[in-house]
Amino acid sequence: MSLKRFDFDYDRMMRIKINDYFEFDQELDMSHYTQEYLSKKEAYEKLVKEKEQSGNKGDDQEKLEQEPMKYPKEYYQYTLTGIVVHTGSAETGHYYSFIKD
Image (cartoon, rainbow, N blue to C red):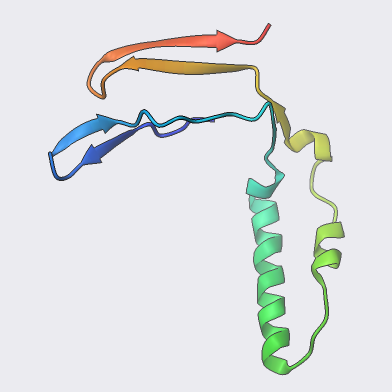
């Protein structure tokens, strides 16, 4: 995964580096960012909207959440193993990394 840490300042008309503090979790669940999950979420939201318009109320979220994913849960789980750090400005600098042993 990569974070966009550079931007363009239209007031000064130059590239800038974003030096804000950022903290990483050691574990990351990517299942909520897959096309499969987002499609299910969109279908659920559409169903809720249709039910509200027709006056029917029911909770189908559990049904959607229980539908099996394409891969097992572990497939979407990641553990942080390293980071890459940039020192310098937006125009020049060096990269170095920290890797978990």
